[in-house]
Image (cartoon, rainbow, N blue to C red; front, side):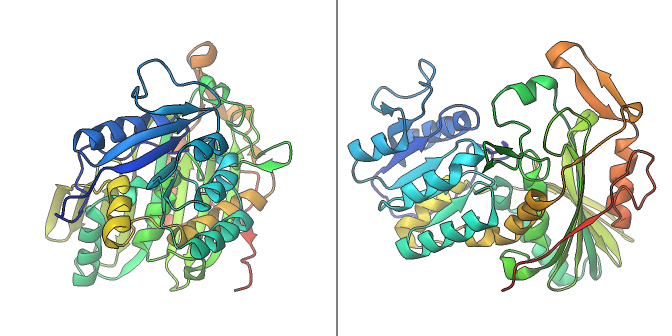
Length: 403
């Protein structure tokens, strides 16, 4: 499911020629689907879209869906009763993405698919084949990729502002309590009844950190990645990882290290650090804020952002390139596949975990995790390589599929 990083009212870069309101269906009206409902309400007010139908096995809360939108229990019912759709948005649990996306691509509509796109590389390849055969656009909900700061970063790298780019680190430290893992049956799961879910820290809550780092490094497709290593841990009583290091090397040889946790003492806006030979650039992607530090001083600027739904509509109407296309999430899917196929996350010794809060509001804190994340990113090292007392695992290399 998505994590909110997209600012309503952002620039869309659409053409000036007026278009009739696009007929839109939303699959999944709870969870992150509520964000799409708000965004569609904004776009409806602008005359860009008409939400004609929604689908969810759990009925929408009163007043959240416009009266003119038909409500269905599932996508099959919706498609049977709703012709001539321009756009289908899928914002449902991860393990449902593949079948729902394939169903949407059997229509003439464009598809907006929340992140992560699917839960396995095999499903990704099937979906890419279906998208290619359909000729429809598929936008993946990595909203941070719409940030105008990415263009500024591309320009500063081309200009040599921070010298030669030597590496990228992604640092994310958030807080998630026990209630977070009780909110749905798939939360914290690697699989359910044999169906992949892959709800890990790097593949769901902080997936934008990984995807944005890859984009800045120029790694979009599966061919752009040379290696992936994982070192996965958990402080919570769950199946998936909540504290991990993912170390990636691009085909061009650039190291990317993602040090991530949802077991911090407090939530901090995640950030990417571009390590240059003559300075650094730090990008807080949820805020679209870029700070540049060189020998001549520091600068900071906050940028605008393109809305991915508007971008997809512009793609349908005018052939505008997609900001976050399915095929360009191939590099991210290699990371997800590395997590999916890795050994079970190693439990962190309770002696190095403290609990703050009471009941379902209690959350785990890995002692010293803030410093550990910083060191991992700075040194491109895993927790075990740093010699942390609770890091009993070792990095696991993922065998890339043959091209």
